[in-house]
Image (spheres, rainbow, N blue to C red):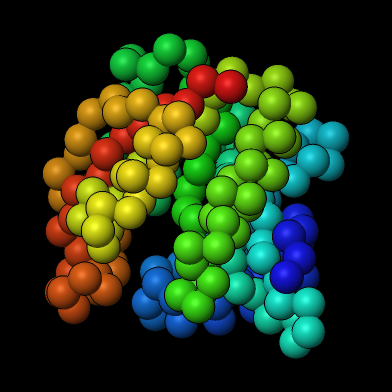
Length: 185
């Protein structure tokens, strides 16, 4: 396995990966194009990373992370910057982290995130904001973020309800809750 920057040439493969791992249509092709651009800093730094199978060159993991000044909100629009210990323009954003099910529990998620954190530090970010999925299986999203040092800001009930997405949890339009969190870096 190899971790490398998420390039524009990876968009079609990332779309196939997200459709398979998250569910059809969670990310549109246009949204992935925009997300890859939000990952690019003014000096060419890229803060999003993919995990690639070194043998068959397929995408097996993704950390979408947006550069400070390149984002205004996450997948949903609910955001409470008035509760943060830094400003919006000082913060990177962790949009999504997905690792293929057969590779989960092998430390690939933390390694992908660490690569993004290193980029954020290098570009002078003071922190990272994210929204975790409260209803994730075994509360894995929250537990993972808390383990790497994120602190809870506030919960947003029905966070994903404005997104036209069928929830993988129960097969209905998503009504899940997000927990907005931050990490000082």
